[in-house]
Amino acid sequence: MPVFDAKGDCYGLVELILEFGGCSFDNALYRVMTPSLINEWNKKIEYAFPDFYGRVQCFGFDWLGRIFAVDSGRLEEGYSGVVMFEPGTGQALEIPCNIVTFHNNELVEYSEEALAVSFRFQWLIRGAAPSYEECVGYRIPLFLGGKDVMDNLETSNLDVYWTLMAQLIRKARGLPIGTVFGKITSVDGTLPE
Image 1 (spheres, rainbow, N blue to C red):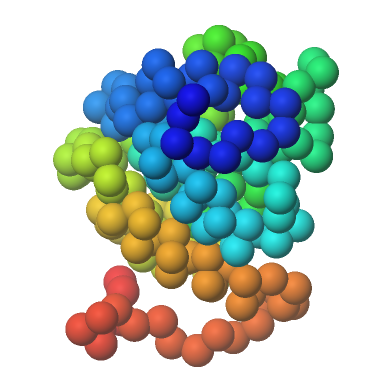
Image 2 (cartoon, rainbow, N blue to C red):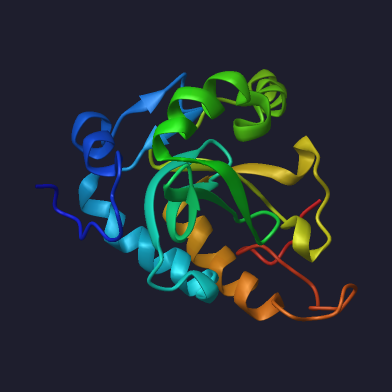
């Protein structure tokens, strides 16, 4: 049995993690989580998105740091549906499939929609693919007025990026569009371009 607390129906989850946990595909385009990190990621996602508390089981992530999980609160073809947690937009997006159809159909037939393949290609022209522990994240998240352009992206440690984004997502939740947060500065005190 894996070293994570499998919740819900677990259809396909245990098999995926046991066979592919810790694997990276297509130069870090998509990665399957290592079993030892799943409980930690479940907590991070539940912190940022409290409506999903007790319902999610994280299993993968992509080059943009988007976390994929099964949601026991929604069924697709009789099994827990897949949800994508997007740190750049602060949104949870329901994907109309379960964990098996996600890997067998969605990632194959709809890779552009699921993994932003052409946007990644633009990034690879300018920068390197992230390592397993990294993602390409927004310097200023889109939900705080950042632009969806290459100049607003940078390579970040996935854990650090999500720790910061989770706090911002919680603070921004429910605020009216256009609410001023104040200046966002980097660690060295400079404003991002």
